[in-house]
Image (tube, rainbow, N blue to C red; front, side, top):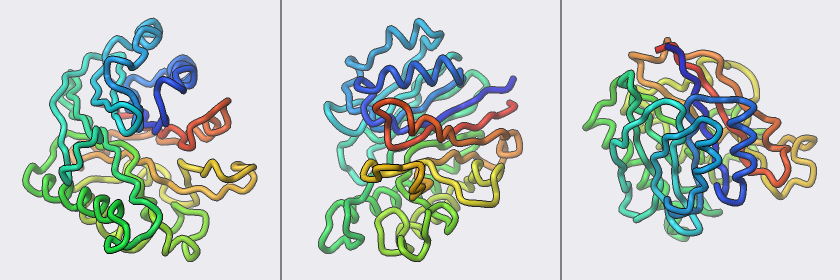
Length: 262
């Protein structure tokens, strides 16, 4: 039975509850993974989500920052979380669908502004987080799994608006790209978005600083959908809902979708 999954850094689920409702009503994904919810779990506004046919919620929350959640039409089971790099942040949660597929929802640290761990602790935390993800996937080789989330790295040259200009900018530095590649390789993960859309510029994030974000189009693909090789061929119909970046009081990220025939 096919199911459609979406991932979205919502940048406050309470502030942008109307946008989540709009997405659920108009696009009707079976599973919606949110990052940067900025809310304790008990403060997530579940009533209106349930009214739209999304009765299932698994989340990890914090007051004011971080936070990940999975909303679903179909039954999901909480299968835990990991605190990589020992940050004490709500950055990961995993659920299992009834068909046996595990969905890993991640919010990787952004890494601050300076790509040097000696002068910027946050950059070091980001690299350590990715290293521990890598080691976990080496030890617990994932099967029948999907990994989604704001990984805060645009790995390919065509995942950013200007490769050369962004080589020293956090999210596209060679060090980060290498760490992400090692993490991906450790789990054997297939980049589903680029499997479906192999060529061309593709973004999921546009800075709030740009007055005309769409016209300037200085984007980066920071949000990802990966799958293990045993189910990657079942994936199709990947897309970025770019229009959502232009909704009223938007997140700076757009949702990324994929459908799996499983």
